[in-house]
Length: 89
Image (cartoon, rainbow, N blue to C red):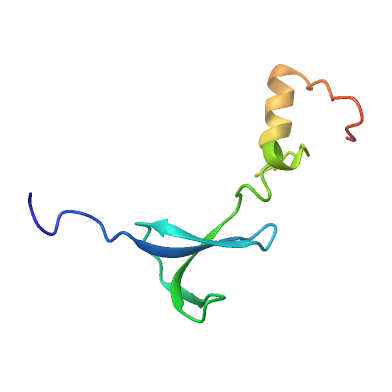
């Protein structure tokens, strides 16, 4: 097996910026930030926008994240989507 071709596989703290939840797992992601975890050790910190704590599939809520009018542009081309029962506009 060749040496020095595999990424560094280590423990990393992932922080969901939407919900504020954090979890410790192993990953090869490169990060510049570090954080002190509950056990007192310092780990690399990776910030994510969506995780299982904020994803609509796991939370049961449906939200549309509109970036630069993409939803409106889609609705102009293909028509408005039908809303589910109990969903607000």
